[in-house]
Image (cartoon, rainbow, N blue to C red):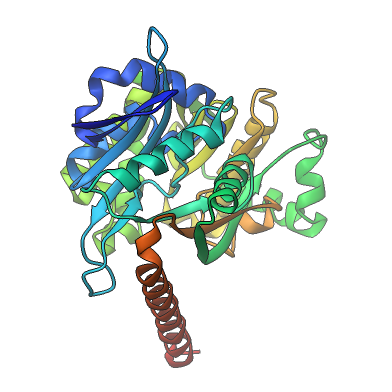
Length: 384
């Protein structure tokens, strides 16, 4: 552990799996952060650290008041090589089960907290001077604070992998959102499919929210996922006991804090679709979905998203819900009409890192272009 003393803050860099002792203060920061990120909540991070936390630490920014308050948390991985070269980067921590890299920052002093963390990076010889923040919202108060600091200090930045995914922001249209977002013909088709599905058994929508109920619902979720294409591909959580333990453990722990629930569409008491929803503050995430592919012709995945959308719209305490979906998703994009713009944000503040910044920009751009060429070739060769 290494700390830096500032006029108003104390900053330290610690291993991600050594933060349990500060979970209470950490949880309070997560609850009031300028932008919420459930994937940086202690109940999610601590179970995941054992598998995805190699070389991961966190920059912690503390107040110098008595008692101290945690004002900033910046999880990141130190990478000594990038793009096949010895190019050290400090990379914001994301992994296949955490598709958002928004650090937790106190809303009352966002720019000052970010500045204190950057000062620490520049002074700590162990930390790379280039910072890459993947899956960072391109707009919003945190992006504004980062951009203001870059402009004020003469830093350099570049944004890569720009994309947008479906987002639910009800605003003043909570009561008739679905009527406005889904066209009349599609709604009629979905009602017909739901009626056909109900011919096989009575349909009901169930919401598990207590830890015990969530544990049982997650078992059903794992079974549904394993019976589908993910099971055949070997990517279902149940295919890896360690991953299943992380996923189930995190969701159950969050449920104990009122931050997780599993929505199930049941037919004759058996789940034909399940959707895991996580929450932090006034934001939610439709994190994982699974459905019984034997009933695919009745669109059980779409049916449960519609049920969950009505439930989310009815929660006055929620301001927005992130779909966690891929860009241009063929299903959710036609139901949720708002978008969350994201990018990989490369930042340099250090005086001696200009050449490394230029090199990283070129390599990042070339890597992206290579992906686009490979995707185009795959599309051309795909049977039609």
